[in-house]
Image 1 (cartoon, rainbow, N blue to C red):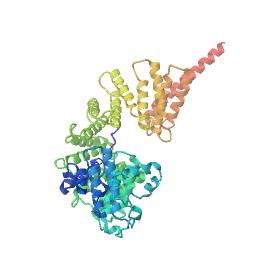
Image 2 (spheres, rainbow, N blue to C red):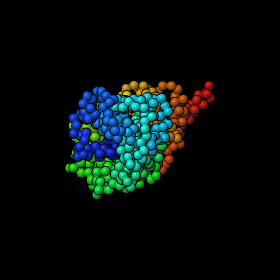
Image 3 (tube, rainbow, N blue to C red):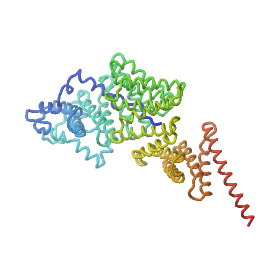
Image 4 (cartoon, rainbow, N blue to C red):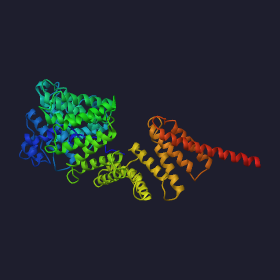
Length: 558
């Protein structure tokens, strides 16, 4: 069964969304009908959102930097207009703000300067991105030569606005919808690291903690570099933030940090996997001491959903007990989430309930399977191929498995439904974009055609063989031994029963496939599989010997 991605992040992305939740208390952009137009009014009576004259910017560079930062926030949270363009304008505003501040006497620094970003800056594509991100800067900036501009002597420690601007820039990149996602994360990391080169735990504890947590989330979701190393950095950074935030003084920030720390531990496969899972579960449960269903229903539901996934996959404890806890947590989330108000989260929770019911040990088997099918169909009532292709494909895949193994109803009809869903999935998953998922779907489809009770038997077997060959073009003995062995087992069965081609050649291929499977499986870990593979191998070898004996007798008779 495929999970819709495991635990989800707090507020969907960065823990700094705590700051967004607080905006009503602190005023500012939350009260503006169109924040961009309001800032344009501040800049001059003749300005507008469509065109801001260059002479409208404030003369004082510090004031101008603050205005640029506010403009970036406004663009990022703007409700109307093109969202992609709004993000570009927001990033440009944040990038220009530091040009009115200083860092290490470098007046013109606008973009982050981490090593990764400097390396990427050499490419022509990134140069074009930088040019496009300066659009708003060019509109607002005074006519001046930056290279000859006087340098400010203020040191970074006396200018915390520089760090704030880079924090905003990092958030803008992290939450950006368009552009190269990998590049956006690198820019976010660079911006957060630049902010932390100024902020200290002793002098700016709150800002430092926020920057450390944001950096941790960025490393956790980073798309390049060693995954294990990124997660270690993420855990270290988030734990740093928890050295400042406490449940008593900063309950919201503490809960957000514990949430993100739990996700990082859950995704960390280095070290003791079971211990990482237990740390993740403890972190999620800690959040429930702050977020309640009455006061913070959406955050509470997110935590309950994460706990549901975590308990279902938990290695420690009794499996049946973990499954019951998982169901309780997921059903708790659904007591708050609704299809109308929270369609995506509701669909994910229903999907996870379906997976849990399908695996459930307690209760009646047929009832659990029917609950699973109903849950997958519920998820598919929200996820469509057009709006959420990945979610739709995962739900269709699970529904196909459920129908294939369904213990009630017409067996032939269930199998046909399963075959249709496996073929549907392949309209989304391709070998190029989703090799692992594509191989799994091809494997399932091959098994469906191998055991299909309807249609032309010879054609079904040819389709099965073609599907297994596809799966084995992705899976290797070294990288995917379990999948590789299972595919060879099915491959051998298909060749043994094959009606097309030469009988002896098909048998030799089948024998080779069974031997390949047995070269991976062990008596301790795969007792049932070994018994089945040996039985097929022995049958094929007996058939081989029988054919040889017949040929010898016929030859002697001549």
